[in-house]
Length: 160
Length: 202
Image (cartoon, rainbow over all chains, first blue to last red):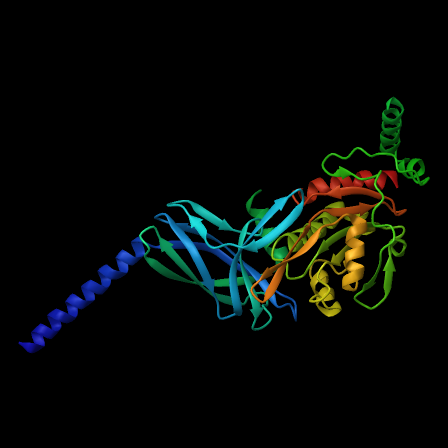
């Protein structure tokens, strides 16, 4: 009897877990095409770029990485050909809309790198996203390292 | 005014005939018709800079005489506009083919405190081995920026900083006359077209 109960409870647990997983999957924020720019030896910082799609109105609050001591989300803006740079409190992720973190706008700054980032490296990133209800989720991403040149060539190829 | 226009047209015509070199290399800085960039032929900027390259050699504008220098200000920890501009410069060179050999890309750091010669050298050479990086003392950097009318400023973030700065690429003709300002929003192809206009003149 106890054995049976145990089996039942175990399968119940499994079902609950499954539901939990699928619920989580439903409320997921998707991260695509994440990449980090390679660095030259001695260069202490780099940028990470990606496309983020949240299924409900959310905010990207922060990003962390084992590859850098300090990770911040910055925004680049251009006014009269002067590039301005600075941290932002969050990045708005409107429901269903893909928000691009690219060299032209928002990007993740990896500062105080623990080592050189070489082509082909996988850089771990953890994104913290909060939805309108204040529920937070974390998303783990492995971002491959690419040279700026390679990423530009890729963009070039994709858009033509 | 009419005179100017006529001269420009004549210059353009000569350029097409392949005589541009003869026509423009008399040291005059007649305004040029650029399709995409900004004509800076009437502006005197960046004539007297004296900075050090990554080998420790002192360089001035005349060090690049005979070439077409394209000067860009930036810093190696710049996440977006600097690598984009340098990657674009490498593409421009490629697009221009044989003509691209006269294009001399010069990267001047606005962050000499953190951009050591070693980092600078590795940084610019990853885009193209022909690229040159120049560096001055903080005072020299300030002076050069002033001479180019380039703005730069430290933006403190926690115990470190990032930088805001002018992202224009400045192009000189082979005699050292400032000619063209290229906005970061232009494509490599657009830049290459305007650079060929500079080459037609001198």
